[in-house]
Image (cartoon, rainbow, N blue to C red; front, side, top):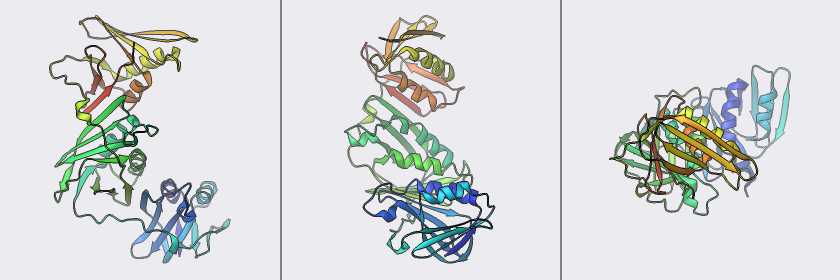
Length: 372
């Protein structure tokens, strides 16, 4: 196998593939990336840790067909440091040689025959979702997962696809993020509600940011009993699903059809929460949100640090209401919104969950108040 390529373009795609390679595994070969080169079909990078796998096409000149194993840790260093405008990579069963006009690296490697096949997208039934919309669904939900929770399913994100309607939901038991969207159902794709690993979705969002993918390009999504497959242009990603039961999340969302929310600009609220949170500490992590006529007062206090108070003018003429909320949970939600967006906060009775929505529609966030 022998190829030549632009180091900059090759480097970005190789880093993405290398991020999938296993860091620890009983099969050392999975700590590498395999490259396949054919003059007819082009060049593909493949990596897997057995639970997650990726296949990426990359622009190269194919000089000789074949396969080679590339070291996931060392090759990025070579690509990052080189000043060559063009590099050539030649691989055999025992080594790969990377060279240019003024540089040569000869690296020991393993036989590509030992590398497992990375699944391709050959599904007939699937959903199509625009790349921009899917990235937004991922960005607005994955932050609400909890990989450390003993309830393993809370480390994943629930996908529900019913005809052209899509719901993506994440919760760690103390907060919940739900983004609705639209897709195109192809050939009656009817997957059951499935839990996808947050890591898989974060990697997918990174892959969809590649310069070769436009916002309107469709991502094919096919979910079966134990795995999910994604494909968009030159990238295919597969992943095992998370086992376990996801909470009955719809029952958690407060019914607010008859309630009038408090409207606040997200950037202003984000800044105020960060300021009020300065005085909090691990022993006193909460910030009091006090809603009064015409203003919202945020007060944070720590036993050793002191206290911080910030006021925001708001349009509110109801009864005084104080909620104690975790500032990190609130800023985590606001961080995924545009600065000029307006959020609607529905004040709950007693100390019930707080429902918040964004003005672009389809996005709901629920957070549990802390004990006063």
